[in-house]
Amino acid sequence: MPGRGWIGGWVVVLLLLVAGSASQPRLAQAQIDPSTAVVHGYLTNVETTVPPLSRLLSFELEAYDGTFWTFISEADPGITGDHAREHMALREAVSVTYQQRGSLLVALRVDD
Image (cartoon, rainbow, N blue to C red):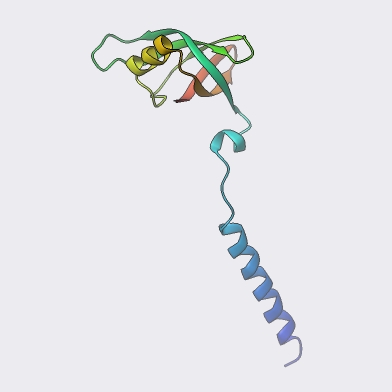
């Protein structure tokens, strides 16, 4: 039957393309989602719930360029309030993945 080899060739090409794209590394969510961004710096003020097991409510970050950013935390950003205070006391840098919602900066993730 004529044309059969042509169709089979396209099937092989399609399978190779699908297999190749499946093996590509995935970018971090902050790089894919245009509504999120990341800033790096030092915690300068931390507001938490009452210990024990304090939850991070809001915090201020001094970015590497000297600007100050104020964030709120609606859910668990991956760091407890106590751990955030430790970073502040030791002046250890953190990375904050956030969304801007109107005039608010909402911390989605705080990483060491």
